[in-house]
Amino acid sequence: MPKLKFGLFPVIGLVLLGILTTYYLCIRRCGDSVVTAKSDQQSYRLVVLVLSAPENLEQRDTIRKTWLAGRSPDVKAYFAIGLMNLRPEQKLTLESEHKKHGDLLMLPRLYDSYNTITKKVLQSLTYIHQNHEFEFLLKADDDSFALIDQILRELNRWQLKGTKRELYWGYFDGRARVKRSGPWKETDWFLCDLYLPYALGGGYILSYNLVTFIADNADYLKLYNSEDVSMGLWLAPVSNIERRHDTRFDTEYRSRGCSNQYLVTHKQSMDDMRKLHESYTRYGYMCSHEVSNYLGYQYNWTVPPSQCCERRPGIA
Image 1 (cartoon, rainbow, N blue to C red):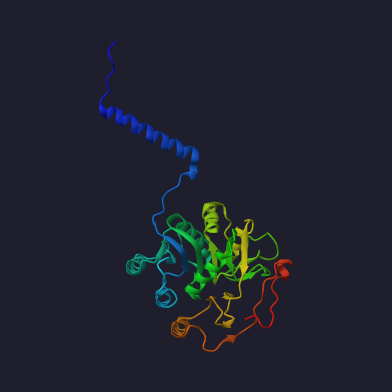
Image 2 (cartoon, rainbow, N blue to C red):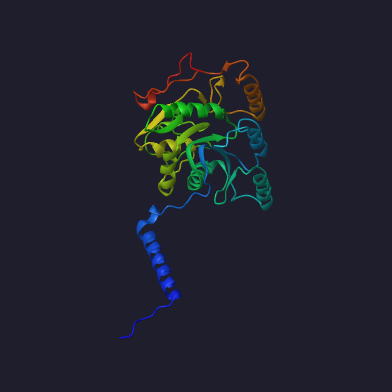
């Protein structure tokens, strides 16, 4: 019986067909377990996500020249902006800004408005998780001022404790009543008469695995008007998490004042940022004169949330 002879190219074709078939079956059977490579191979210690409006170029430039200036190479910064409702000339302006600074996270499927801030955070976290390796993420607004070097030192101290828990770090509130009017009103909130405990949105920090949890479940998460309230709800069922309330996060709806203990301070004008940055870089502290506008509180995790947050003298 004559021996069958195969040319080289048919053999290679059969091998390639086998590889493609295996890959196709793996995708069909494994689904999300197929891991795609991150587009940025560098691993960052901290990713800073600043929510910004398309027209807020001056605010972004002020942040670039103040608290984001001189940051270490292991800190990556983004300004998140929605593109869907913008005119062509606005998009061109943003593209030019991004070409110059390389720090805009432009979201093509997001209509940029107050009503879509939660969606902006969710889309931003998903993009960052898909494209970067990192350890922690700081979410802030473009009227927030942060001391990145101090935050990194504090993260080092937290990790040196050897904790195996995930970190959700900020200034928490557990007795906030559900808003039924105004720009932040919630018509779909039915869980209870108060919001679940959450870190206020002027600035909070998440460890990588919490961002992973949110990104992996993005399609199933309920979105409320307030992004910080939504974050508290999304993370409420997560186990092995440290909710770290810290009075050094001045992130309420108005600033509690000026304290040299603050790591993040919210509701700062551009002039405020320049003054804080100049003082910090020149003298090593933000406030030449510390001021307390109203009292802060330590969160009491041993009582019901409605009793959590009693303001006391001596807490700035």
